[in-house]
Length: 330
Image (cartoon, rainbow, N blue to C red; front, side, top):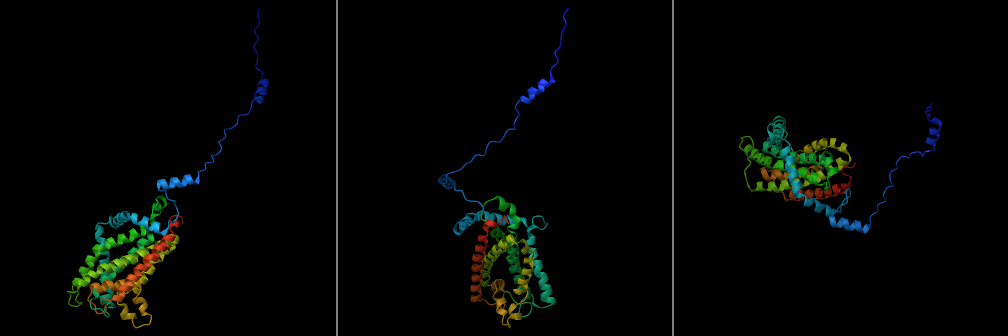
């Protein structure tokens, strides 16, 4: 008779064997690769592929060349901004003309007929205020476009490499695009107002052609101012809240709705207001369109207009260029 014996596993022996097994270690990442490139190879690669450093202010001459190479993009961007402005309104682009017309109508009614402030020394009050309102609105809109050119395009500034001067230039050019049709309406209203029995005559003469260089000088001056406010607002955004008050002071201090010479010409400091830039460009536009004895064509005013335009354009561009590497980072 055979007896079967079943072996019972020993727990202690198994534990002892398990204790002698080596502990499993967690996998470790490989050491970082110390990759170094030869400086000569880097220079050759950069030169062969026309690579440019990011976030670095280029030299002034190269910056101007980059801006000039993007002139087609500036035109497209400006036209798209001008077209998209009133796209969601029922009247669309008609508001680009209706807005300055309505502003001029309000000023004519209040200052021309009710208070009669604008009639002092002026033969045609309607044409005087209309020309001043249309021209000043272009300057005011250009300053507003320049102040928002960097802050409202931060995603574009941070993601695409291009000279940031494209943005304020395109903003002012968009305002000039809007001003074109408005100038036709301005001239038509000025001429039609001369047919009224209580307003002075506004004949169509060769001097109307001088409106073109007057607008071009104002455009250059406005572009220079746009460069300045774009730099200042990009660094200190709170300044954008102060600009409307500055524009209001510039409006009343430039003779948009009344004659500066009539009210402050007798004071020793009156010449400061008469020869400040905005007042000069309003004078040039009015002397081109109106037949006002107080606003005859003046070569001195044209010299001041050209000087102010060149000065602000050059200084504004240099100030904006010096802050090129900071835009989108502050």
